[in-house]
Structures are given as structure tokens and as C-alpha cells.
Image (cartoon, rainbow, N blue to C red):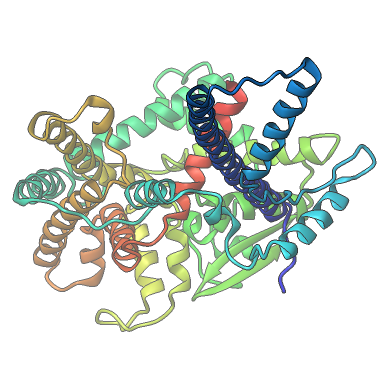
Length: 495
């Protein structure tokens, strides 16, 4: 038998209290019925007595009989009639109620023991769900309906207009991707994001004390150099010679092979690890390589301050590398797209003329400019498709279905919106894949260079959500329940 939880104990105690209340209400009903029966019998006896007295008086009057009765005899006559009348009434039996004795000396566990004893005496089954028995039939129906409507996975019921709108939004995003993205550093959007990245680096450098470039020097290169000097780390190896020739690495791919240069949780972890242990970690041929570095001393007097110092160093060094190095010619090699470094562990397959693995192909794609700046350009058509789909869904819900604005919030867990987002990003990926396949001419590196990795990741996450919803259609959505309970908890605390 499973150990009971405090919540189950409370529910069982409430179930016993409900049984006591129901029993008391039934007993009150029995008492009312018995009282009505007694009152009815009294009324009938009174009528019969009055009839008998009237008949007796009529007989006495006709017979001219005169009785002389003193006060004491009259009382005896009245008392005998009263007793006889009371004995003629039916006496309904009223059973006593079972109860739980609760005194000041009884603790909670003692009360629970009495609850179990009461349940055994009255045949209350605790093996079933006590919460279900605490509700009435109408309450259970209302609760089941609410769970089905608000806390269950539901399939989408999109109409033809939903699919048309979603397809149109995906088509617009696909056209932006095909016409304005192109190769890294060459398309309209990549050049725009490159310029924005340079400005962001200069702004970050100015926050750290950079006063601007010297006369005739490039502002971006000056800001990058300033940040490189300010945020030095022990894992900034530039080529294979810096690591003793233990593996192949160049200035064009060292930001990819060094895991600490990844702008994500993976990069943060390996950066903190490197700064605390004076090591550096790289990936080559699908293997993780760790090397010792010069002793690196973090600022701070305790663990928390040292962790903060390590985080600031990591973030500042990323800003120094995101737009390339200070001595780079033209565009330079930036940092990878978040989690792109993990593709180096997929050391399988044979692609291209030289039969290279997918890990090596991923490195060569990065070397040709497929970095964080290009990832920002790739995210623009994805963002456009996302926003357009949400806006059209909201507008259709408001003006076509006549819903209130509160019901038109574009929340992603809505089944119809989730399906429309899947269709929109599917159309975007279809156009992107077709364009990349046609322009690459079968070259794997060119195909990946022209592919929108951000769009495919977004489509993959939506596809997994849709598959999950399809498999769990009608089942309980635990995340929705947790979100509701959290909101209610906060409301109770604030209220």
C-alpha cells in the first residue's frame, strides 16, 4: 500500500466530515418527518376527541342526565383523557448519530486515527480517489469540462482560410530569405547585420571606457582591439602552433573549435571551466580535446565574485570576437551561431569530392562566413514569418470570429496558431531548401552556406510540438496545469 501524503490525509478527513454532514442532514430530515407524523396524529386525535365529546353531550342532553363533578374529579378526567390520547400516538424511532470525539488533548495524528476508525465503522472506502467523492455530480461534470477545454492537448481545427493565411506568411518570409539573404557578407541583409554588429561592438566598447579610434583608423577595428586588451582569457589560441600542433586549427576556425567561444550555455560552461582550471577545450574530428594553459587568475575574493568575473570576461571577449579580430582583413572570422559548435561532434558521413565527414563540412562552412552575424541575417525572414502569422491569426480571430481582444492574444499553445506557425515555417523552409539546392549545384558546402539554419531549427521545434500534441490529443497538459496553479498561487499571495 502506498504511503499517504498529507494532502490525501486532509482529503480523507474532509470526506469523513462530508459523510457526517450528509448523515446529520438525513437525520434532520427524519426528525422533521417524525415531528410531522406526531403533529398529524395529535390533530386526528383532537378531532376524534371533539367528536366523541359532542356525541356524549348530545346523549346526556337527550337523556336529561345531570352530573355534578367537583374540580378534583375534573382534573382526573382530563388527565386520563390526555394520557390515553398520548398512548394512542405512534412513537417513531430516531437513531443516534456516530461522531468523532475531538478534544483539546487530541493532536492531528490522533484525529486521523479517529477518522480511520469512523470510516471503518461506516464502511467509507478510502481506496478510491477521495477528491472525486468530495464533489457532486454536477461539480465533477463542470470540472471535467474545464479540464478538457483548458488543460488538455487539443488538435487543431483550422479552416481553409487559416491554411491560406499561414502559407502566405511563409511565402513572404521565403521570398525575403531567397532575395535578400544569399551568401554570408554578400546579401542585403548580411551586410546590414554586419554593420549593426560593428556598431554594437563600438557601443559596448564605449560603455567600457573606449574613447574612439585614432585619426585614420577604422572605428570597428579600434573598438575590437580595445576589448581584446581589456577582456583577456586563457583559451584564446589562434592556430595549431599555439596548442603545440596537437591538432589542426587556423585563424579562420579557432573561434569554432574553441568551445568557450560559443555564445550559448555550452560556451559559458567551458569558459568558466577554463578560467577556473587554467585549461582550454577544443573539438577536432568529433573529439573533445583539453589542453593546459598558463595559470589564469580570476578577480574576486570569493567564489561568487570569481564566477561573476569569469562571466564578464566571457561576455566581453565574445564582443571582441563577434565582428572579427582587430587585425583581420575585410570581414574577418566571427563567433559561431549558438550551438553550431556541437555540429563538430557529428563526425559521420562522406560528402563531396574529398569524402569529408559532416563535422569537417560544418567547419568549412563556418570558415566561409557562416557565423553569428550571418545568423542574425538568417533570423530576419524567420521573424517576419512568425510575426505575420501571429498578427493574421489575431486579426482573423478578432474580426472574423468576433472574439474579444482578451481571447485574441497570440499564445503559441493555441492549437490553431501552432498549426498555422508550422505551415508558415514549413513553406519558408521549402523555399529555402529549393533555392539552396538549385544554387549549390550539388555542392554540400554551398548548400549549407545558402541554407537558413535558423528557419530549419524553428520548423523542427514546431514539428515536435505538433507531433507531441497529435500523440497526446485529449490527454492532460501538465505544463498548462502548472502554469495555472502558479498564476493562482501568485494571485493568492498578491491578493
